[in-house]
Length: 244
Image (cartoon, rainbow, N blue to C red; front, side, top):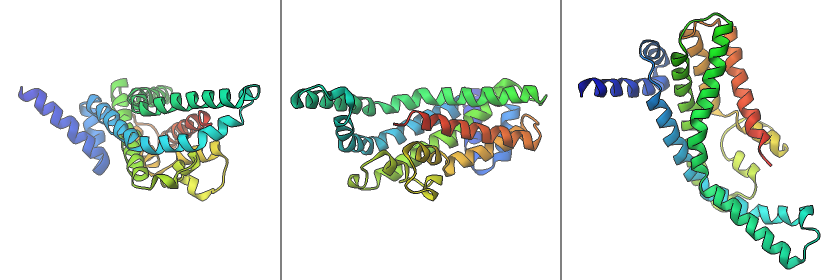
């Protein structure tokens, strides 16, 4: 029993180290790449963040979606009563999805980690760096703990502390949390969503990934930083692409 407990303590200490002493975390990942605890922590923190933000998301839908649907050409040929009924059905369906959005985070965490780890490992192979896939994937799991887990938890906590009446649109949600969206007020929704993804936690995780690729994969700094920034921008573009 001592060995598993020791391994668990070591994995958890690496998770803490990636925040307070990244160099120590990189050394631990090289020596003993354990990704399970980092991924689980990301999923739990991300789910809690989604749950904290659920009341705000529900409020925005209840306030804004009926008006948007009322102007939808699909309802143009319906009577007022029929259109109202269809709109209420669609609002209810959307609210149901929002209630379970934390499940989406549970699925997103491993997918995002696999995406980031796969891209990083591909670059490592092309650049003839070092490190196994397990080491690179473990690095990605710890990076996602910051970029997804802590980010979602922080965002959820921030919006949950504000009055619901201060949120009326998706843009209100995006601009409630510190991000580059603050420097372009009044931007279109998709632009705001893209800039909102460039926030302190995502930038922090980008720095950690770049440094980790140098330390663990032995990539040259320009390659490591280009890879890390490209992943950040691709993630932000992906997030903005699905916003309507």
